[in-house]
Length: 145
Image 1 (cartoon, rainbow, N blue to C red):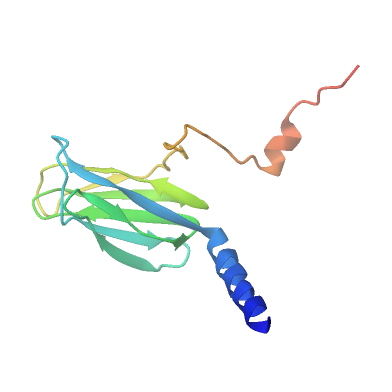
Image 2: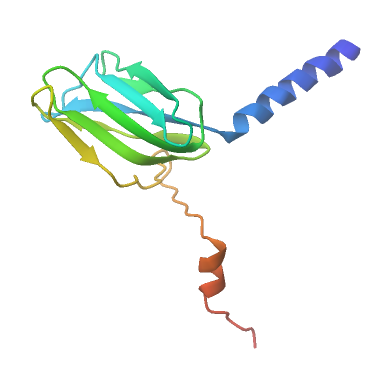
C-alpha cells in the first residue's frame, strides 16, 4: 500500500513539472516548398541565455520537445542558404509552430524577422489572447437595467 501511494506521488510530481512547458516545432523549406533536411536550428531562451541546437530530419521537420515557456530567438541555417533569424517567439504552455522558409544565398547573408508570431492553434482553429489589467480596466462598463 505504501508503494502504491509512493508511485502515485511520483506520477503527480511528473505531471506538475510538465504543466509550465511548451514545445516549438515546424518545417524548414526552400523557396520551391521542398523540405530542407539537415538544417541547423538554434533555439535561444532570451531571458536565460540558454540555447540548444536541433537538426531537421529528412522531411525538414524539427521539434524541441518540452521547453520552458518564455520568449525565444530561433536561428535557421544551412550551407547554400541565407540564415533566417526569428526573434521574440513567445512560447506558452502547449505547442507552438514556427515554420521557416530559407532562400538561396551566401553563407554570410542573414534575414532577420523581429515580430512575434500569432498564437494560432492549427489543430482546431482556436485563438486566445491574454489582456493586461490596464486593458481590462480601460474597457467600458455595461450596466444591467
